[in-house]
Image (cartoon, rainbow, N blue to C red; front, side):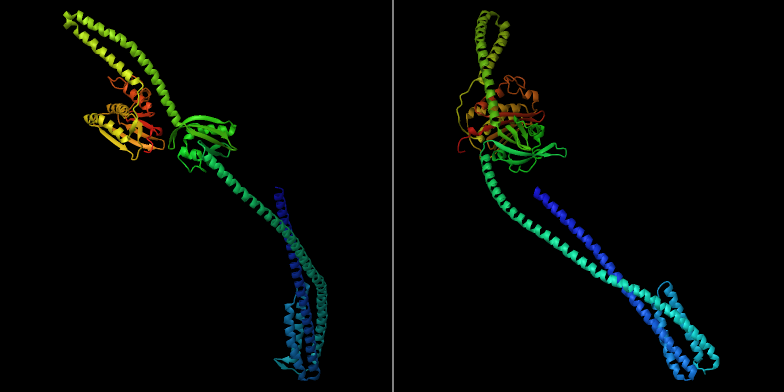
Length: 591
């Protein structure tokens, strides 16, 4: 920062020096230019005065020559004197015309005009004394007065001429004095201007040289620092690569984010900074780095995760949470731990879907075991009284044999209900007993087709369709094929009973995901309401008249004993879907 301030001060000082020097040099240049212009004007005026003086002397000389020619001709009557007179008149005309070019304003102009007027008057007088209609006249004594008058005018002209000449000489001498002064000022200004330019150039060259030397030193320093930074970058890249390798072998997903804030400083989103291999596998994406959380996974807001992340960043409190994430191609349970990282956070998370499923299976097994204990107890307590009732009825029948016709209908009712109770007890014991599994390799094709054969008669009887869609190359599973078929048959029979004749469509579809084989049994029946869906696997709950409500309970008991998770979704009026998840741990190795 200190060096930066020095550079700024140096640049500002150099700029001010340059601007000041340029202003002064421009002022001197203007002054020099003005002085030279003034000197040139003074020289022109001196030259004009000198030329005017020459013309005045020429005019006076021409007048003298003309006067001499006129007097000589008057005195001698010799026409040879007229030739100098004519030549003098021509010169007089020329000088008089040129004198008008050098006239000045004020009195000088008036004096010159008077002088020219006198010269013209004098020349006119002389012409009348020597010419008449262009011919020379003979001199006579009567012209002596004209000569005297002409002499008087000539004397006046000489006085006027002397006054004009003296005035011109005075003005010229004043201009000569100023010319000498300005002749010295102009070179002096040029010398000052040149010296100042040399000094300014020298100062600027010195400062520029010093700046270049400093820049060269800075460049050398910068080059060395760049080399150090390159080494640092290589080192950090190596460390980052090693760290990424460490993160990639982690069994947990690890992601880091930075905060994106609005103009008021509020967090409006987060941007991905990093994501390890397990995180990419868990979310099924590898292109998240550099993208925004809410744009790619908007469910984070609806599930309350975003608000938790904001709290972690702003308050610095870690967040530990288990949640079910449904959306953006995911339908899994996760456990995460988020901690603040600068102006962002880092989160580690694990997919606990299988753990949750196992817990669900174990809870169901515990519940069924409790139900089985109660059922066995109830069955034991009911069977003994039921046997005594049978024996008592047989004894009563023997004793009222003579009234058999009257009491036989009552005995039939009792016998029928006793048999119903016995059947119910048998079904209860069958649905709750712990079965011994006879595990063997089973293909999904055999499992589905065997179930379809069992329910095919029902489908044909009600004019319904059965559709099978099984993905190729599915692994075999270790299962008790007979019990699995029994469980799936119970589900399929319930599905058939829920559909309308001629409109029903029973679908079996089998697919594979990375950790399981998914068998889906779907119907387009009347569906199940949400409140009844929660009771679907309860013993003795049935949605159709005459049903014992033990079929689906038995089915789930069989499936859970195999480790198969059963999930049901239903929409009233649209149908019901049973999804069976066969986990990878029961796959036959090598298939």
